[in-house]
Length: 494
Ligand code: NAI
Image (tube, helix red, strand yellow):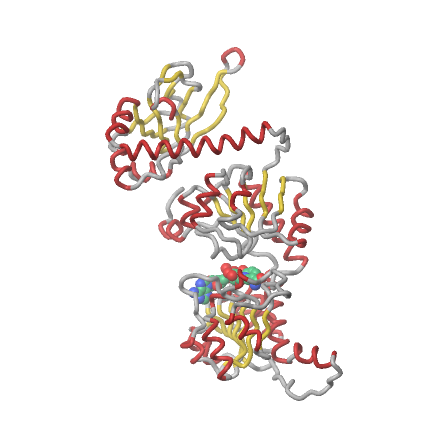
């Protein structure tokens, strides 16, 4: 790892651009220490700062009878002695190598010269220090307000009554949970002041601008209470040192069962029959469905949920086709699922159900071209993510009859409407309004996960993720971490 890479990992130098980093890296000298070596001593005057490159450094402070007590352990990417590069300072603690240690060292005179020659670097430091000061002010304000609740504070956004019940039932008083009804957005981000953790759901906005604000307000963890993470700018979170966790699996049965509910309702026209009989119309005309037995179902994305659905549909006696980057031989042995390519799945299936994550590669995977390859009258189910489908192309497919019916639990523009009671307003989204006008379309408002078991599982796993973070684990160390693709691909060490 280059000096630049190490400096990028530090809190203090991370916001410097490449040119400034090049200037500053030249000023550091490298030094190695053996286990037990003292790097500096408490009480001495110092004018050097240290960046830990490798190994661990103990921070020791003298207690009663001058016995040294370990008050912290610094690891790679952490810094010590920042004050000393601004003015000669009496060391408030000693630093001691816990094993072999590699350091980068910058001294005050070199640093002052660098600042006077490069005003933008001075400005960066002022910005950094004022942000730190603001974060410290929150702590002081908290202490002065007499807030004696020492539990970690978690701001839970976009909450509904059922969210609160499941979280409170599973919290066991571990965390100070504060439930906010609004979603997290740039407008509501100021609410997180004083909270170390934010807990968000599928439609909260966690883009770069919001993430920067989270960082400035001292948030260290974004705990998603869902499986998908397409609404989080993972690169920005990583760059700002904020960990992201999710709930990878919580009753996949709940979602798979909802997908089959949509399929059964559409095929046997239960939604129509329900309305008819309530109005005294007991006619069966127009309610003809087909036997699922012996028909072919195509599952796109045969992960946890896709597998559950494969079991359910195979139970109906359907031939199950699957498309996935990593076929599961065991599933093939168990229920005879046949993994095929996308084109074969589209052309052979009477029912297609989407369970792939939303990624650049899967966005609008159902479009005019792929619909063109499907069987006429196919039933399309989507409980994955709305943007897996190009909704305009779907509408055309429904109009032409190519798509026989569509069951949608998700919709690409759902954040504008789903989860809210808008019954006293007109729907201004024309694409959604058109979809709702089809009698062979059932739209549910992202409710596939909504079972008691799933809600409890979501709350439990989210809280467990926060417990791990409270234990000091970060980024890669967290069991249910979500890292940006660049980090995962490069296998970059944190
Ligand atoms: P999972 O990660 O277990 O399975 C996803 C599968 O998709 C994996 O097997 C993966 O290999 C496959 N995949 C990845 N890229 C693909 C591609 N380009 N083409 C085809 N397959 C691809 O995830 P799980 O738990 O099954 O959830 C699937 C999705 O369902 C989530 O990403 C989420 O968006 C959605 N979901 C929706 C819920 C709802 O309430 N409507 C609730 C929970 C999840």
